[in-house]
Amino acid sequence: MPAKHKSVELLKLNNGFSIPNVALGTWKASPDDCYNAVMTALKTGYRHIDTARIYRNEVSVGRAVNDFLRQSDVKREDLFITTKISPYEFQDPENAILASLERLQLDYVDLYLMHHCVAEVTGEGITPRDENGYRKHISPEVFSYVDAYRLLQKLINKGYTRSIGICNINVPKIQRLLETKDLIPPAVVQCEIHPYLPQHELVEFCKANNVVVEAYSPLGSTGAPLLHDPVIVEVAQKYGVTPACVALSWAVARGTVVLPKSTTAERIKDNISLIELDDSDVSLIGNIYKRMTKRYLESKWKINVYESDADFRPPT
Image (tube, rainbow, N blue to C red; front, side, top):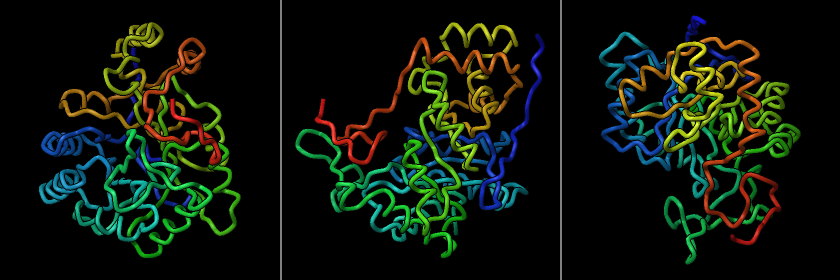
């Protein structure tokens, strides 16, 4: 059947701002590749760029964004720039965001995300590790993600960011943030989400509570294993598009923001070319996890960062 193409849409956040539902992800992009990818994306029509302190490419992102603004008629307020605070910075978010803004050469970011739900020890580098290679964290009983979030929200009033949110979080933790009286609700949560890890409960909970969900690793991370899944391939053949187009269009059809990462110009251009999927195909893809469930991002912590605060599991 002929594919009906979709344009990038703006989703309304719970604080009144809007977020484009397709972004360029920049994880694992080297400085030169990152600069070229961001420039290609912005020239192609992307208006949402996602980076992080831990990616070590904020300088390249900022250089590309500022070069693009100087060379085009696009205004800063028409772009949506996201960066993230690393867990070792959680106890001092003001200095963390000021350093990020300096690297980005921006006056503010549109979204500032906590990169995990557990704090790391300070003063030992970006990802402090013990003698066995495990990331060194602070017990949630001493300093929790709620404590970190409480500090983060002060950055909005100071004009350093317009919105805040949190990554790698689950429903009980989101609910705790929503129920804590002195906290503003997160505008966005960003998690690994794809047909092998659809996180249906989280997506539906966030919709019901007016929190936008962003899906990273939408193709299943390195090597894009989803592109060879028989259901994805079959649906792609039905519409005459690529498997990547189907996977990304599925994410958008669910009402999530999708964050495809690429440093290849043609793929960057392809990743913003989405289609409308029939509801039956959205449902079909959403049930792939019953045959195959897989989380691709597994950080080496002694605490299970994806589950409860108190879940200190022995290393495996």
